[in-house]
Amino acid sequence: MKSADLIVAGCTELITCSGEIPKRKSDLGKLETIKDGCVASIDGKIIFAGSRHNLNREVKLAAGGIYLEADGLIGLPGFIDPHTHLPFAGDRDEEFVLRLQGLTYQELAAKGMGIQTSVKATRTASKEELVNLCLKRLDSMLLMGTTTVEAKSGYGLNQNDEIKQLEALQEADKKHPVDIVPTYMGAHEIPPEYRANKSAYITFLVETMIPVIREKKLAEFFDVFCEEGVYSIEDTRILIRAAHQAGLKTRIHADEFVSLGGARLAAEEGAASADHLIAVSDEGIQSLAKSSTAATLLPHVSFFLMQEKTAPARRLIDEGAVVALATDFNPGSSMTESMLFILRLGVFLLKMSIEEVLNASTANAAFALRRHQTIGSLELEKKMDMVLCDLPNYRHLVYHTGINPVKHVIKNGRIVVKNGRIQPSP
Ligand code: NIG
Ligand code: FE
Image (cartoon, rainbow, N blue to C red):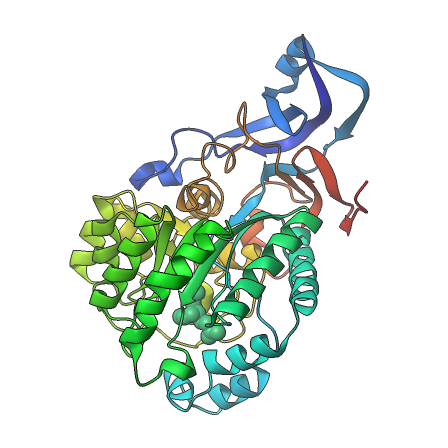
């Protein structure tokens, strides 16, 4: 008998998202479900996932352990959000109203608004303010079932303010149950100080910032906004290579508005992920399909910018790319913390199946963060990160739009949300 300090017993339906990761082609649409399913863990690690019959034979509850009856609930892995711009200050509601009146996101950027507005606000904010903003947003995420989130800097764009953003993430990570995977995104925009001299800024990133971030261990990933008017393919290649050389993993904002070839570059250079891909070319799709670079799709951006064009999810999946889903939470193009909303948009806008969106926001999202050995599915040896929803079956996660069905959340083997309320840390 194995000894557990937490047993979640009798989920009406347990969705494990288990099996080989990453999930490509038809595998993305396969979802293992177990009726009357149970999961047990010790010290935050899963030691059992299966039927109640086998649980009773193999697992006993240790003294002082917790037994959570999940009758009437469905259980699934915690959602993983592999693309957010979490540590920003201020908001852009006024620019949102201008967009509602017809201005486009790029027109606002060209007028010196957009990302620049958030850079001004974030430079002005103190680290403590940023930490508190992050904690509040992480609460929203957790209440909607997200247990791991990638988070980028990129609204400081100078040494002190980028470091301030990344240190705020480090502190928020220590204080909050949701795990943060930090990304340095000094190449999110060209800072106002370097507008006329982008190449000097690229040199500064390569020679000063990347080594500093690495030495201070402030980020796991490096990200670039590869886009017309921002960083070209050549700029991006230089930056990605410098990041790899310094030992950082990389991701690229690729082919969002203009088909520059960012997806192909990401695959060629071995980036962990190419994100957005609304304007990806056929060649870009083929390169991703042949690579281990995840295609992280952000359907809320098309929705929020009211663009008809969306990323070609079906073609990416059918050709064999590793498709993951994320919020892109940021104040300009995607003001949402909700992976639940993303699942629904994945189905309604991207024409993915319900099974596909579930695997894309758990197992493949973990792969996009290169954390698939430890999270993304409910399997032996993985972290006990689990969501319990008050729904009759998993189809209702998408079918029943607009509600938050999350009842309990378990992070690292601890019940952190109970009956829809965040529990105080011990
Ligand atoms: O992923 N595209 C570039 N960056 C963000 C938007 C950031 C902002 O508008 O503040 C994105 O969409
Ligand atoms: Fe983004």
